[in-house]
Length: 201
Image (cartoon, rainbow, N blue to C red; front, side, top):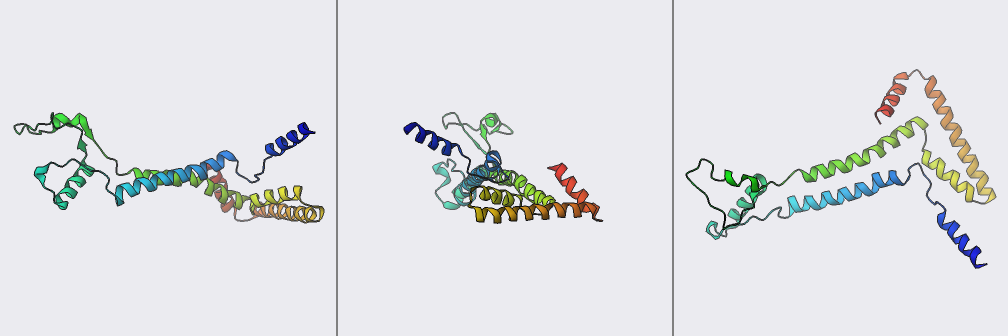
């Protein structure tokens, strides 16, 4: 009795509840990855363009005027800064470029990181949009809706089951009729464009 209950719970646990056109890896690509990239993009954008992106060391000789501090920080942000301890830092004015000897310690800040993260999130979502457009245009209906209705028909009572099966059959018939009509259509350019878009995907 106890073993039967355990096996029944295990069987229910193994049962897949999601029905749709996308599988786990698809949803991972166009949902989870996009959300993570957008979160990183938002964080970096806020830090870069709203808050202070970098705080450079400013000697006391420069003064404490906010305009001078802002200028030095902006200069460090655009031109980069040098990770050199003050005890080792010395400028030789006799040289043409006195800072050239510290070039290997230069730190460059990448201002384009938020844009790249935003672009990556769009590129991860783009296949979902293209797939939805192509599958809807080729099928003439929402294939995911048909799959969900068929799954609901399996688990519903007899009256609702008959209505759902009839609905699914009607949708499939419309889809097949529309594809047949499209193949016979004089608008072969539209059909060829659809095939070309599928080849690109």
